[in-house]
Length: 252
Length: 234
Image (cartoon, rainbow over all chains, first blue to last red; front, top):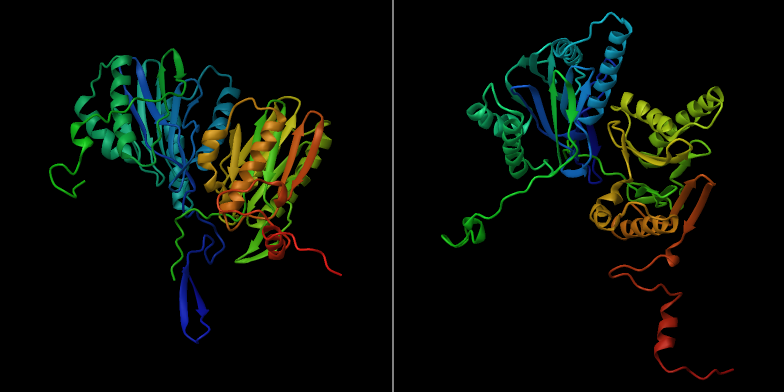
């Protein structure tokens, strides 16, 4: 951290502290994200894997962009959802584009499955972390290959794991408890959507950076489908909401 | 005094890009400030990249100028090699490339807009960090904070050229009214199949907003007008 000495007109010295993105040895590191996406939630269900995210790109506290697609398909077998810095997510998509292209160029009948893509992403994220220049994202990778369902997560420091249901950001705190209680191996598509929407609604109520515009994506052995953007109805009809100070004057 | 580094930097400008039925209209204010001083009150923030693609610059004047110069240079070579005009998408992606790869050193948010024969009029936003987003309209700079609500209400798909230009001028003028870092004149650049038209709107041609008054040459004119006309004397 650099310290800048500022001399006041009356002779007093003030010191300002400045965090430099370029350290003494000339290398760079990312300090903080600018345009960010909030939670992504995902889970396995009977026919495959299902992911959901809203379409918001926040700029600090401003809900600046409202049509950001944060779930994209990767090759034939995988879906990638991202929260965090959108420019880094766009760069990751370019890396994966190249990866899939080279995979296709082999023309050997094989194609990278979700497990391989997840591993590739883990290596990329961890190596960037070691250079103190992370890609500022939490990624959810879901897919199906030859009937095998796969769902994993990678964070910006390279932490990675697989599970039956995952969530990033606020979703970790708000969605996962719901999923832990209500997830089952044999959920139908309709039940899975309802369960995800239950989580999305809680996130909409309680996450300041969530917006009411969602996309749900599913992947099965047949292929990938990403839904059109849609909004959910919210409920405000609790009687207690009508007059919060009724019971105790001045309460909220 | 500790500077809050985690809040996004607001940038001294208002820039707008709007698509309409047939092309795009780009708009900006004309104030360049160094701290509290207005260094240039008639700057041109809408810079040419190619014959058919322009860029609205906000943030550090130096950073946005030098990036524009590099991108203009690359696009020039690209046009020669391609044998036809560059597309707006390519221009925007070159800006993104430089912004993203130098994200730690640059402080600029831009709007790239233009017309090409494949996609027609298109607008791309490249904010801090190097994200690229194609949008039907885009706003940027410190003055844009005052325009989110305005555009939420006033934006319509499929406007005519005149409607789009009027919207842009109104919006920049509203932002100038409230943002200290924006001011001067409203410049617009309209790009479509027929080419490029540049316009320039000075304060007197813009509507007056809340608590703004009709400008006069002198108080004396007002006093003269209100009292009964005095007989001329030699």
